[in-house]
Length: 253
Image (cartoon, rainbow, N blue to C red; front, top):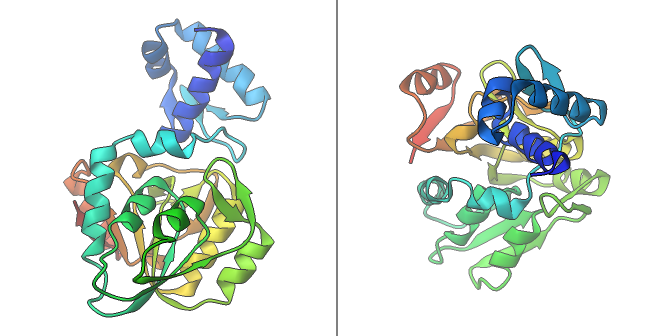
């Protein structure tokens, strides 16, 4: 692996995990810790991450993994989360806001055909999955489409969402922690998510356990803004207890 390839892979690892240590990276890429430190210095100078004692954390400009790659990561857990989230839907017609993200996309594929749903989304993959569904009244929210997430963002997106009022919003997140709440590396994505949280009567976050106890640069919601977290069974009991004490209902799939 060339240095440039390794550095790209390191940056993507930081995005996925939120924080990584020098020793972990050295073991993963089978290089010395001195090589990793040089790589981190290069990535920090280019704005792709921020070095901290013993490792690195993301910055707002950190390289994000592509949607297809994220969908393949922990696919079994994400599928269980998506199916469990369906049980949170009311048995009658309802209005939904669906965020971008691989787990929310899987949830969209499982929306039950036995009830009428009004769905608003800024995510092209979600819109593609629901475009031909006879039971879904689909509305595509406008904006500039980010290539990383294939989701519309920007002032037009936020303005459109701010005019909505829906019963349920299903959101993804890059990180969730007791200290920092829900966060993402990109400020435009955060603005869209923040507007979705404000537009919904009830907010459900779909996040596999790897997203927990992770913090990214831009917070888009506090824990008290969220009603339900649906995650997988790799979550530790102590974390469940702490999140429930913070006011969240935690559903373990």
